[in-house]
Length: 540
Image 1 (tube, one colour):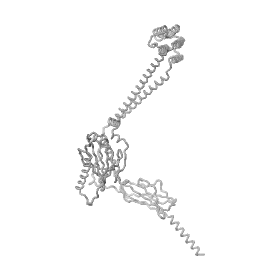
Image 2: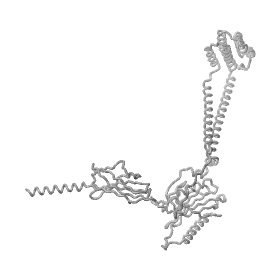
Image 3: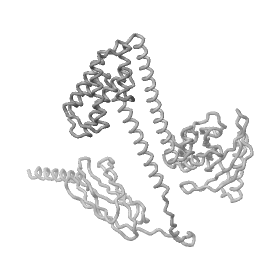
Image 4: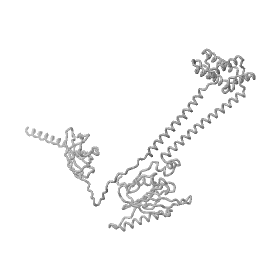
């Protein structure tokens, strides 16, 4: 019995030990190095060895003072045979020299807080050898004259824009008002009665008010007679108007009785007294005269003879002529408005961007379009060369063995870009080349490029070698100059500018060649933009 109890006790102890062994966590911290330069990135690693069921939580806002946190990378998990490795990485930086400690970090593992060890870091200054690296004094400030050209341009542009908007507003308002007036036009008879109805609401008291009242009253009847009876009433005196009406009555063209003409004569005489003799009649007299004029208008409408078919056709033809004339006037006004707006817009554009830019944009100057279009950025060949160009460089199928060629454009029409990769034979000698050998190889390389240009039809070449430094600081060979290219269609030669950048490697030679007309106004801008984008990719 005692042996059995002892056996169970040993088994329980072994079981507990196995559980403790499985739940054991191991925490480590490390950095790439303990010494860094000012501004150099420090990678701080935290590694936790635990099982797959462990719950691990890091601080959402870790504190690394006096270091600055550049980036907090996500947790990386690596599975082993009996456990998991949890890796956490932080990128830190420090811009002051001295000795620092990366502070301890608090981590929660299965609800239990764990504290990491702190690590000592040495930040060293950047050593500058003043004997090899020349130092220069700070350049003095350059005082610039205050210029008002930009301000004046903005004020002028604002003035022209406001003037253009105001002019367009007036044109639109005038056309709209004319259209509304045309829609509201009534026949002469209806309009005369409507105006007489409006006079009923007026109650004049002073002499000036009576004068205005009688002016409107006589204008109504005169305008109606001129429009309906074809009498020049507006420009006639009272006596002349009555004589014309008498003649129409005698000729049978206007069947008015004598009483109506006498009543009209009395109203015109009263109006003359009010307007010229400054008299002020009784209000009842003015009201009676208004009623008389209304009666004259009604009787005149009834007395007018029915128009003949020829008169109707003549009237319709005349109305069509008037409508056509009005339509032509409206079109002319609209055309002048559009033309004026276009001229003002062109002047503003020329004043803002310059005559040459506007001209090249309107007439679709080829290299101007290239500058404004979306450029293509891609990598070509091996080693991969990253470059931005106006168009995609298309690979040439038929090339000599060992040569890969990409190109686009035409130097006689726009802008020519060519990118070539030439495999070099392996070097048998492993000795370091002398300066003379290097210069000889460079000259051989240049001569080969010039021979290629001559085979392509280039003549009258003036080429020089210029030092050129890429964006990564490496020095390469650059050829620049001018040459003549023959146009096979016109048999004329065009003076072109040549830029050739050669990047020699141990196994391959890369050449970027650009050709464009020397007189092209935007060629140098395209050239500079392509060269600025040139980069040899070390990693894809």
